[in-house]
Image 1 (tube, rainbow, N blue to C red):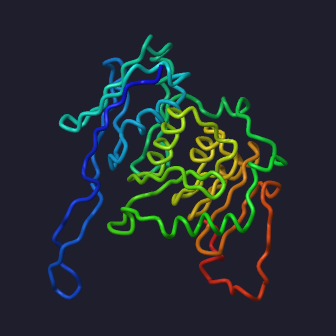
Image 2: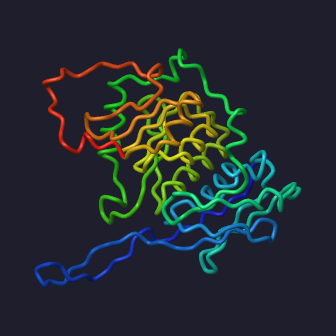
Length: 288
């Protein structure tokens, strides 16, 4: 039985009067940021800073990626009330070893300094991704260009207001879901929650993010079973090490027809551009 979810929504942007460099006042929009305190069976768990685009899915994905619940069927309901800035999670039988699982807190590199519970690193050996020779778990250069073009054309809060991260889930050339939030970890958790609710596997999917590829982003993608990640930004050393260990294919600095494939070359069907056809810009040399 699937959990019952509210459909609480809140304005994603707010109008603001600013003064520009010409001394003129004008109206702009900025992203709305709000605190959402999550309670599980009446016990406070964490406060997430979020845009509020799909708060129920965010909470669901957060519980999944923190490995606090084993199955989506363990959750009876998630109720979000923006009047009190809270999400109430009701489980069917409680969370086993709740205190033990939430005792260890690690401040992450995510925007807003997120918190993860437990030791996700200890679960890496249990994560399994589809083999690299499976056609649906590979990416061609032409499909990569198509994905990047789809993201370029995607309407977004970022285009109108800036200051947010976006994440998307693709299957082949089909954009399945796109979500934005003030932090990239919130965005990936929201997609994870949506996949979990749909009972969707990740082996034939591609994950896109505007944020950098840190260890947490790599681990969460692997937990979702997604073998290929594409980022507009760069990568950290630990993110690279974990991706190699787990067998993920990582692309960074990916915009227009430029990209860097950091690892997982065996999942990539390259169709190289002529060297002299696309002069590299100085910014392409930066790897961070």
